[in-house]
Image (cartoon, rainbow, N blue to C red):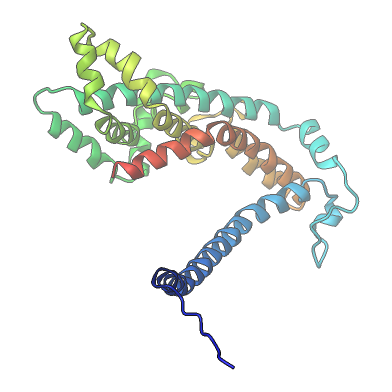
Length: 300
């Protein structure tokens, strides 16, 4: 009886050998992705869980909020903290509207001044441009608290104390916005601008109709950062806003925490109210922020 052995063809043998070499590589890639996603999930939970705990605590009673061991689920589920918050003697809604108006107004002013300054430093040629840009960058290394007294004296001389102008105008021309948008404007393709100049467009038209539309991701990112900076500001409003009804939400929450030091549900309800505009703003601008980060990464 004869036995026949079937040998693999050279092409088949090469394919099998290549598959064997890929298996360890695919296994390493799988474990790398597994570890990466595990780290990302853990990081997301570390950010989301405290926010979820604050949200659930705001629906607890005072006794349930201080139980030991603590439970994340309210027993019972109640809106008493929010009802007490809005029916108290503290003008919570007024503080909220003051913060919202100040944040929106200062954000608009920052976008106007920063975009024009960044365009001049990125696209126009004039004597001393590098010196001006260097001086602007140097101010980023100065601690903001140093400007507290000079800004206060300026606001006082203009008669803006205890008004919305006191918490919007001093920060309306920050160096960070100019630096941030300048770096984005520099990376924009110059061919479109040159074609527009050949068609007779001037600097203002190029800035308004070409540069700004192409820079929507960067402008949206700067808008979010500017609004957050004003919304979370605590020290400056304490100095320049004298009347309780003219205070913003962050100093107001500190007063609320002092007035209800043991009422944790009420304090958490105030924190939830303070976080709502920030979450809405980030949800609306999330796509633009991601595009801005991706564009910055691709262009070095």
